[in-house]
Length: 103
Image (tube, rainbow, N blue to C red; front, side):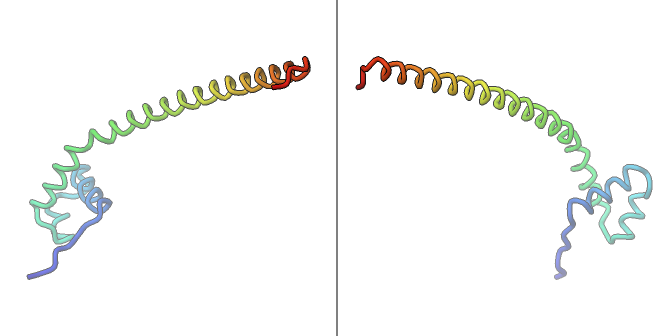
């Protein structure tokens, strides 16, 4: 029994795009790479079924970028609030010590 060949995702995409673009016929691709027509059809169907995920990823990336921007704004706001609280605390502490009320 022969060893099964494995194909990279890049190779599969190139084969499918050659067929879909009309640059080469499925028969030409099958002969050149010694592939079965069923295998090429499976790759083509998988490619077309999952094509929408390319656009979904773009949408997800946009949503992630918006979330990161919002979190960065929140960190900035909290940092400013912390700095103000520290200054107020230092001011109160020095005011207490200045009045001779050490605790």
